[in-house]
Amino acid sequence: WPLISYVYSDVVYKDQYDDYIDEFITTAFTVSNLTDKFTTFHNMIQPYVNGEYGEIAGYTNLPSPVNFDNSLSDLINYVSSRVVEADNYTP
Image (cartoon, rainbow, N blue to C red; front, side, top):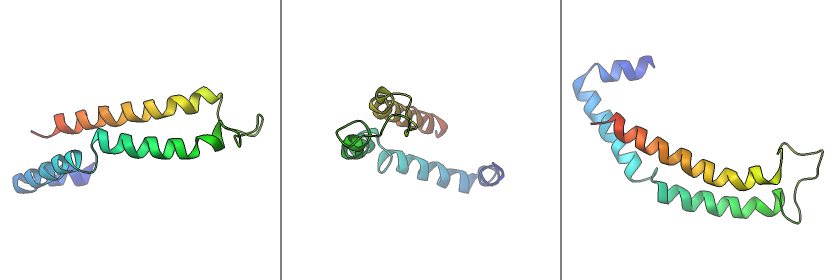
């Protein structure tokens, strides 16, 4: 990450970069904000993956319908961990 290394080598830019990370994880990239969006989109496409109009066996990339159902919680858990990582990354 040469660009970030360059930014972090200058105290003024580092402080500004850290502020941008903090702003991002407290506005657009919050767990609650993304959970709402992910849930909406997951529910929107669910009938076309596992429901009445779902994928046909032999013509799908899903090993099982459970994988799609679990994907929502997996994605939310991933976002949660990234928010924690970003928060720990900045002072």
